[in-house]
Every structure is written in C-alpha cells, then in structure tokens.
Length: 411
View 1: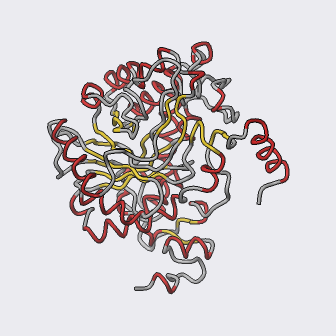
View 2 (view 1 turned 60 degrees about the vertical axis):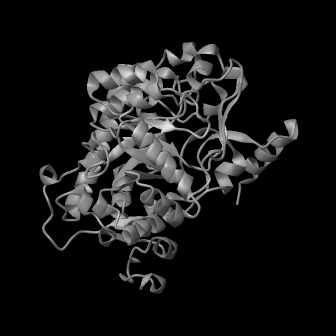
C-alpha cells in the first residue's frame, strides 16, 4: 500500500492538468526479486577465481559471420538519447568497450560519439529496430555489431516537444519541436509469421554478418520466447518491469509488466522445449540488476548474459536525484541541455563504468568459485535456495530448510 504522502502527491499531480502522473525511474513495488535467493556452497572443492571462465558468445554456430564475443556476462541495457545526453551515452559505450562487453542501443541513430569510442576501443554496439522506426536506416543498422528487434510492450515518451531541438530531432528523424513517443507495437509485425519475416529481412539486409536479437517485456513469456527462437533469432532479450525509464506514467511503472524473476522460468522452459541452447541461442535479461550477486543468480536461473541500466547510469555519474524526466539532471546524465551535459567527462565516466563492471565480475567469479564452478555457464538452480515460499513458488528454486522443490514444480 502507498504511504499517505506518496498517495497525496500522486493524486494532486493529476488534479493540475487531468493527465496521468509521470515520473522517472522504475517501479517502487516491493516484489519478489533476486534478493529472495541465496547462493549455496558446492560439495565439490571451491574453484580459485583465476580459473573461472566468464566469456559469452552470441551467434556462434548460427547464421552470422561475425558473432559477438563478450569477455564478461554483463552488458549495458538499451537507453535512448533524449533520455540520456550525448556524453553519458558515449561514457556508457566507452566503459562497455573497456570491459570487453557490449551496449544494446536505444531509439534513434547511433551517435557519432558512441561510434568513435567504440571504434577506438574495440567496443560493440547493437542497433535497435524500433517500433517507431526512429533512425532505422541501413547506414545506422550496418554500423552495429548486431541488431535487436524491439518487441517490448512499453509505451512512453522518449522526447517531449520542449526538448526536441534540431540536434535531438535529427537523431530521431522527426521535425524540430515534435513529440517522439514509442508505439506499443510494430504496425507491420503482429504475429509469429511476421516476426520470422522481420528476422529474415534484417539478416539478409545485413548480409548475414551480425546477430539478430529479439527483445520482449512481460506477458505470455513462454509463447513470445518460443516464437523468437523459431523465427531464428540468435538471442532473446527479456526486460522486467524494474527496468529504468526516464519518463513513464506512474500507472504503467507500478502496475504493468512482470518482475524479471517471474519471467525467467517460462523463458527457460521455452528454451528447453525447443532445445535452443544446443542450437546456440542465448538468453539475455535486464531490469533492476544492481550487483554481481544479482547477475550470478540470473545466470543460475538460465540467463547467458545480464544487462545493467540504473547501475550503469550510476557508473557514469548518476546520483539518483529523481529528476530524469525534467531535462535538469544536475549531474548532466539524464539531460540534453548542453550546459549540463558538459559536466560529464566521457573518459572519466567510461573508466568509472569499467571499474563498476570489473567489480561486479569479481563478485560473480567469487560466487561461482563458492559454488564449485569452473565457468559461469555451469551455474544452475541447484546452486540457489529460495528464502521465501513466494520465491520458491515463482522460480522453482528449492526452498531453504525444506531443501526440495515445492510440489507444483515436481513433474
């Protein structure tokens, strides 16, 4: 239940203009999450940290000539220009490149600053095939080291008219002063057959050079994931409702979607039923991941790599002041105001993000060693226990103390 002050603030916000209350950030709901799981030691001898592998590859043994090789099981989740400024976006690209990772890019064309630091530091950018088709031309898609078809059902304002300057509008391919909001779905992509056509179209247009991924939010997760696998995607990306958004209606942020922890079991079931892992398909997840322990638990639940959003923003300078939707971020991260953007140093922010990813990776390796694993890909749900009945019921992880699967998970 909402606190009285929060309830009053929300209701008063709608009194002013008759519109739903908008705000930045992610859901404030306390829901079942990775904090409800713990890692348990193995009966086998613990591994030394230097012996544990952390690399992940996307597109191996698939249809692509140039798979994406990650040195760590961490990547940067998709966040768009307009939500973030140019220097913050470049900082994300630099930190990711230094860590041997990748960035799932947001809406609009890839920024010159992102391309420059990516080229100079051996980074990887995955272009977005967006529902609004913002900046989706062949020059943009061809630069990417992969392409991700955005099938998430998350509406929202990317660029409000008041910040739609010529510079911002050019990135989105819209008139200056126009609103850029993302539709809830692709107009030309309504079913499984359409999805396969889009995967095949992009693969052919890009000469089979780079991996094609498909991204979903919550709802009918098993059916969506299975459709993406059968459409031939090299990777499926799942985003939980804890994901960061610069501008979101309060009602959507708090009451629409599924927590990431609840999306993993049906997704993994779709992978098992289609034998997708044996075919080289990867499962990527993102939304509310805040540490190496979260990453390890997601890997043990069946993910292959895990995306950072809010944590990555802290890496490039965010201090969670809660004004992301105002274009007045005092740290210069969530703003396109050139005066404020200048507060972010691309070099410094990139190095800080690299340090953060390195620290998270060390945490993952430590937990993998504790669980007796030689490689992070060997993590399974047997390495976890659920602290609460709800977590055990949702995930199929053994309940601590009971130390068995709950009856409805026994097949």
